[in-house]
Image (cartoon, rainbow, N blue to C red; front, side, top):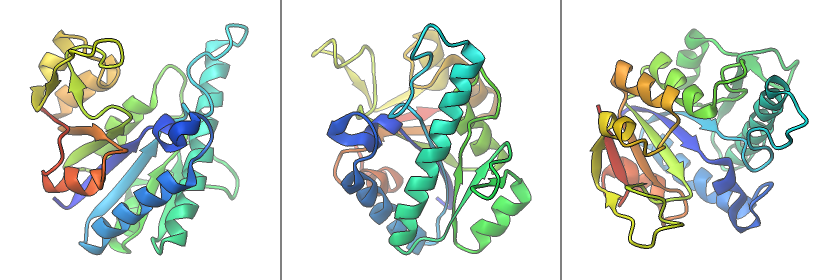
Length: 231
């Protein structure tokens, strides 16, 4: 495995606090990513914004404005996590689909490839730049654009279940499931737009729990207990 797109849940990065950042959690992610970089892997990162803002957190706010707030939450997350990565000795770049002054760079596939060649981890912040599209869709879109081999979907749940394990203690976890079955059964691994894009572009995913020990490295090596979503 040479090039991957890592999707990090904003809520997972918040740890037990459920909001903001848990620095120990982010440092552990940085340690694992450094390990993969040292093996020569090329890594792109998308981070959700749920630790700051989730959907229409207020019904008084227009959907477009709510989504714009969510996009900016992902920019904050990427800037923070990229700095933690740098403190761990990892070169980084943060890209957005819209101008953020000197905070980020405009997304360019050519520049991403240059950064990969320099051994840098590239963060894709700001979603797609448009309302009504989630960071799930951003993840699949960027993975396809940069020609990633697989999406590593790090969540607060350790895989894909036939029902919500938080509500059903008897929920069954799949070791492997097709994206078509995910769509047909409406399992909500990623949202429907992202699921269909995965299916159309034949982009596989590995879904695993971020907080499991050495979870990212184990997912890449095939030793983790998550779920492989096939295409």
